Amino acid sequence: MAPESVDVIVVGSGPVGAMAANLLGQYGLRTVVIEKETTAHTQSRAINADDEAQRIFQAAGLTGELGPGFHPCLKMTYVDDEMRMLAEVDFTKVERPNGHPIGSLFNQPRLEAALHRGLERFSHVTLWRGHEVESFMQDEDGVSVRVKDNVANRTLTVRARYLLACDGAKSGIRRRLGLKLEGTTALEHALAISVETASSAPDFTYYPCGPERVGIVTRTAHDEIRFDTVVKPGQDLEYVKTPEYVRSIIAPFIDPDSVKVKSVNLYAYHSRMAEKWRVGRVFLLGDAAHLMPPFLGQGLCSGLRDAANLTWKLAHVLGGAADASLLDTYEVERRPHAAEMMRLSDSLGSMLASGGPFVARARNAFIKLLYHMPVTGPFIREYKMKPNLFHAEGFLFGGKRGKSKQAAEGAYFPQPRVEHGEEGERPLDDVIGHRFAVLTRPGAPAEVQQAAKAMAEDVGGVWLSVAPAARSGAGRSGEVVDLEGRLGEWFAQHAADLVVLRPDRYVYAATNRAGVTQVHASLKQAVRPLTRWGSRGSRRAAQLGA
Image (cartoon, rainbow, N blue to C red; front, side, top):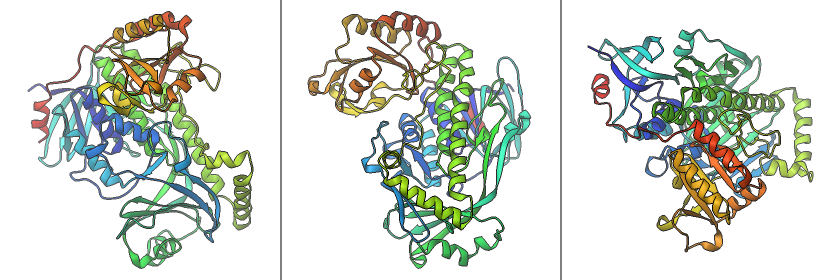
C-alpha cells in the first residue's frame, strides 16, 4: 500500500506545533500533527503572551469562542523583599499598537485545549495522539516519515512535502538531524508554583527584586496564580519543593490557606540555539530551535512568531505562488530576533538575580532612582525595554531593511480598529485576511491608487484605500476608515503614499509615488496569486490516525 501523502507533517502538538497546524489549516494545506502523548498535559508551563503573540492568535481565528481565556496584565510592579514599590508599569496607559493588551497571562493547558479545538475546524488537519516518529528520510521531492502508533502497536509511513519539528527542547527530530544546541545553561534553577484560587481577586503582577526573592508572581487566570522564583545556588533542590518552603514563597503575597497548590516544578534556565533551523525539507520551530530564559516572557512568544513566519511561506510555495527560495528567508528573519530576545532576557536575569544582599539593595535603589528621573522614568513606565520587532533582511523590497531605525521595510505594521463598509468597525487584520495587502494613504493620488489596485491583483492580494476619520459612516467600497488616525500618522512618519504588507503583517515595502513602479516590479517577480486555496481534506490520514 502506498504511503499516505500530505502537504506538511508537524511533530509535536504543544502551543507552537498546534499554532502552526491551525495556520496551515487556514490555508487549506493537508496537515498531520504527530503527538507522542495520548492525553493533554495538565502542567502550567509558559504563562505570557505579548500583544504580538495575541495578534497571531487572532490571525489563526482563535479569539472569541475558541479563545484561550487571556488574562490582561493591568499593572506590573517591581518590589523589594518588604513589598515596597521600586517601579511600576501601568499597561492601561501604554499605547497598544497591535490592537491587543501589551501583556496577557494564561493557563497553558487551557491555551493548548483551545488550539486543539481550533484544529477540529479543518477536515484536512488531523491530530494523531499516541504516535511518535521512528525515522525519516528526505529526497528532492519530500520527506518519508516512519510513524509508530503506540496505542495500536503498529507502524505506518507518511509522505509529506515538508516536516516541522515543534517537539520541544529535547527535540527528537533535531537529534536525528545531528544538530547541536549552542549556548549555555545557567547553574541556577527556578521553582514554578501554580495555585488555584476561589475568586479572581487579588489581581496583581509583581516582579520581586530581592535580595531574598527574585522572579515573578502573577495571576494567570481568573482562578490561578503563578509563583516563579529563582532558587539560590547551594539550596537543597528537594527541600524547595516541600510544602513548608512552598508556603513561605506564597505567604508574602496571599494567604496560603486560601489557595490550593496545583503543581510545584523545578526547571533550569537555558540560553541555547540550534546551529541551524533547517535541513532540507525539515524545519525547527520554538524550543526545538531556541531556548531562552523566562525573564522577558518571550520563549513561547518567539515560537509563535516562528510559526507565523514560516506557515504563510509554506502555503505560498505549495500553492504555486512563490518559488521554494522563499523558505530560505525563515531562519534569516527569525534567528536574529530570537537571538536578541535571548540576549535581553539574559541581561535582565543577570541584573535581577546576580550579586549578594548588598549588590541587590544597591541595584534596587538604582531602579527606584531611574523610575523617578525625567528621561529614564518614561522608558520604564511606557515599557520601552522590549525592543520593536523588525527584520533586518529577508523577504523585503531590496532584500534588506534601510539603515535608519525608522525604516519601514521589515517593521511590524500597526493594527488599529478601522471602519470597513457594511462590516462596520473591525481590527485591520480581520479586514485584510490571510493574504498580501496594499494600502494607500489618505488622499493618495489617483495614479498611486490605480497602481496599488493592479499590484494587489497581480499577487492575489487586497488593495485598501485609507480614508480619514471624518469619512466615518460614509466609507466607499474598498476603503477603510482610519478611526484612530494611526494609519495616517504612519504614512506621514514614513513619507509614503503606499505600503505593501506581507500576510504576517510585516512591511515588504513603503514608497512614495516615484518608487511605485519599482516596488510593483519587484513584488510581481517574487509572488503570484495562490493557485490552490482550500482542500478537500485528508480523509485517509484521519482514518490511519484513528
